[in-house]
Every structure is written in C-alpha cells, then in structure tokens.
Amino acid sequence: MSKRASRKDYLEFRKGSWHVQVSVPAACREIVGRAVLRRNLKTPDRAVAERIKWPTIAEFKDRIAKAE
Image (cartoon, rainbow, N blue to C red):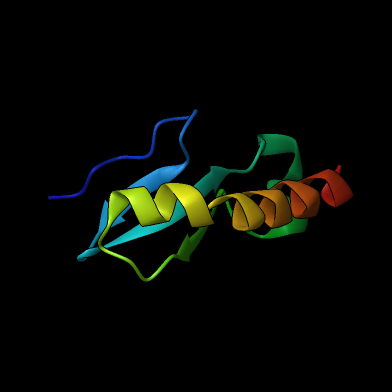
C-alpha cells in the first residue's frame, strides 16, 4: 500500500522505501517535463527520510523556480 505525499511533508512510501515528491505547477510542466518530481531516498525509515529529504526538496524547488 502506498502512503501518499502530503503537500507539507513531501514524502511518499512506495515499494518499501520513502520517496520525496514535489508537484510541478501547471505553468512549468512543459519546461520541466513532468507533473511531479520524485526521488527515492533509499530508506524504509520515516525518521531518516524526514532528516534527509531537505536537500532534494531544495533541488526540486530550484529546478521549478528556474522554469518559471
């Protein structure tokens, strides 16, 4: 069972590990090439995922900002 990412925590549990998931605004999707940016954090531990998610979120948000 998949645990969906909420907008405030950016995490989704899929296939036994936590993933960062950031939605791309509709206006940027053509440039970014996706509706959602997602990366596997390669950990089954939610506490670890909470600590290590921030650099990936920052990278994704920077990519979106550059597309705007």
